[in-house]
Image 1 (cartoon, rainbow, N blue to C red):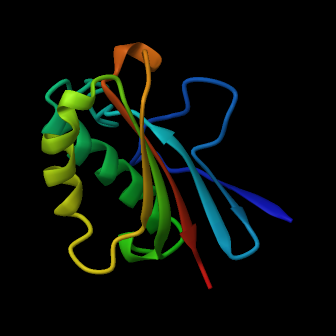
Image 2: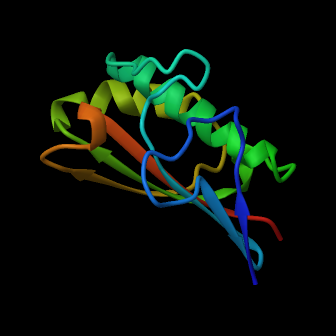
Length: 125
């Protein structure tokens, strides 16, 4: 069985997908772009964008009484690998101990002109 997870504390889906899906003991969080769910503003600075995305992911996890420590894998999409160092510094502040597995991929473009998108898988075991 799968259960759709949704919160108004993270940006609404901008297409035909769910913010997250709980399937068994795993939570699959759709790619998040750096939109502030309150203002609708897109963060453009890579550090601010990374923080916003990770706050959005955290808000989705809270719906299941989980924390960022529950994340076992992330996939990061960057439109410019020159942003990697600044992104990595911001990302690291959310995962100080035992960080999840991660892939970082350079892409040509992302929805709404975002510079970064992050998806995550969490374990609810």
